[in-house]
Length: 321
Image (cartoon, rainbow, N blue to C red; front, side, top):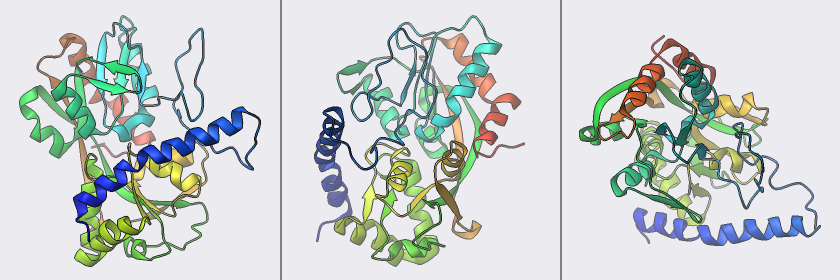
């Protein structure tokens, strides 16, 4: 029987096959072969894209929801932990209003582990696009920021979050607790612990709720038989799998459920009790080698302001206030 790391590698390698299937469905739609329902009806970008002379977002093919704003000659570059994508429209608009001289901001909302590798290596490629921008500010969970503390000359805590279970509206499988995720007929969408901090925190909650037996059932047995799906990108995948009927339940940050309901998607929340839950702290670090140090300082001030904290609370995060 394969070990845990081997299973994750196998799941990751199968991603290409799934991409091929997605492209095939898109091709069917483009050639006039209609599916009963549009498979891209819930596709991101869920944020408001910037206005351009030409709009060329093609569902399922040309859609890059985790890169934001102006990639050419930005005055500020921010690498955000991926689960905060829903806050970016309000945050960047609010910051620009306070600093109208700042017109061009580029931001990424990829998994913090991927962003950390990008910082270390100096580049990232998505499709045919190679990005070599150095960030001014990087945000992530407390553990990740602490492990990279030598990169920063200023660190601030600005928000918190807790775990919930996301299920389809009506909760057809009757899922009420973490222990229900070990049932053979329950399909789980699980953040990949290889690059998402939430994955490791959810694993901790599995052990709190049901010990090693629950953890092994979900993260080994069900990964092997395919009923636990490990995400390839980040938090966007789990809501999509729930919405499209590919998974029955997804452990997510509470903010994820709040946001999906806010934009009218048919999901609901199952509360995880405090004794089984995990609370995350989100920290921002200003890079020592920030390309735009003065603007970075201004953004750090804004991120810890009452206005920014109100934005985070709007989307289901917690703050000190």
